[in-house]
Image (cartoon, rainbow over all chains, first blue to last red; front, top):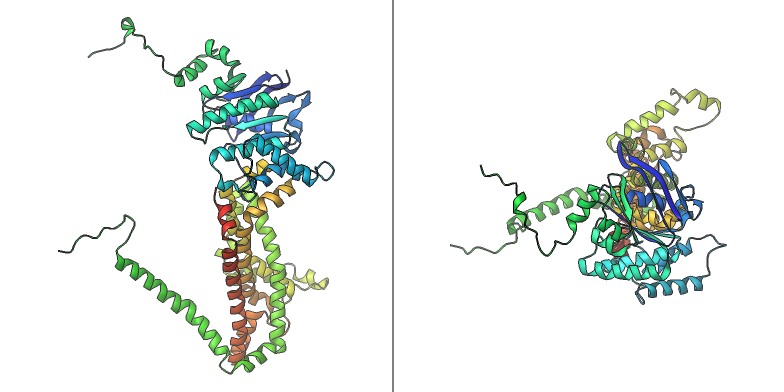
Length: 259
Length: 284
């Protein structure tokens, strides 16, 4: 187990966002944080990325005290729900950003940066888009630029906040498959937040179902689907699951009262 | 019967439109254009040479010099203050945030004369620090420091007011992205925040500069009206006018008005020249 999260707690004012979250996940896994809005999943992701601070708890990653490192030293590639691309920079400059801000000693030479940018744009299938501005791209293209930008720093961990939330259904399906393939190729520990159970179950190796600042259950998609640990998990999965083909009729148990 | 004219839901009757445009045009002509024309025509009433001679007068030149020095100190300081205040208010949550927001607006709601008087009460001969300052031979009122301080007070809100709505609209995500990509605080500010706000900042600085050069009330109280020494351009205009030197007064006034016009033209030119870039920054 390489990522160990121990009793993380966080409140915003008087609202408890996380009430002691603990779990462990192997390095290189693809983990989904699944839950309704307000369940604390994004807060947990932001804590892992160093954008928010936990009041209590520990996180160990690869044997290191993860929360002791400031955000800029974690090399946690963060992909925001609304992409947060630098709007005044071209696509190429966006992708190069993480390399250009490095200290003089560790910064690759200019030609090397340009080569890396080309490589990453090819990886996200956006060759030839380097000179465009984010405002000239579609939602799906922006999403992939955001991914390329996060991958440029050779992240130790990839954190995605509702990565497909702002896209239309068809683009979402394509991008989902593509992301899974990308993960298979790179093997970077990836954690993504979603409220779509279908997305989580289809895509992830491990799914953590969250509710009201706690993890209700964590396990493989098959495990979660077949053996929901709590009534909440059963209900949350059942609610948005595709309707069964045949609706069983149970006439003996009808509770109809005719006054 | 006249046929019904097809009209859009938000489209007003043509008469309403004509009336609105006419009223606006009359107001602009009466209250903005006419005074400007009068200023320039009065300045040139005695011919170009008389107007130029009035500006070349020693006291007038000193007033121009002082005005430029005051603006050169006050505007950068207020730009730095405005950026840090807007940055703090829009990018962080801290106790006392709404109080700070309210305080920034204070100079807009307080009469400039009162702010001048406040500096007199603090630094003047009869003020709290007056005797101490006299003993240490430090001159604040009736000298450059007092004039600069009064100007800073009056022009305090311009940059911050311009930047706060812009920065809160842009949110914190781009900065967060920069930090997660390994950028330091300064690097994030220089590479991400500043480019995103530069047009708002420029506009705020231009407004701040126009007001800093034109401020009369607060400066009038702390300057002491020493000719050729502590008179800024607006004060010099008043002095000349009271001395019945109309050509001189209006010549200096025209110069002041020209500075304002140049500011406006510069802003319009920049907006036209960089229209594409401005649109890209404001679009999501």
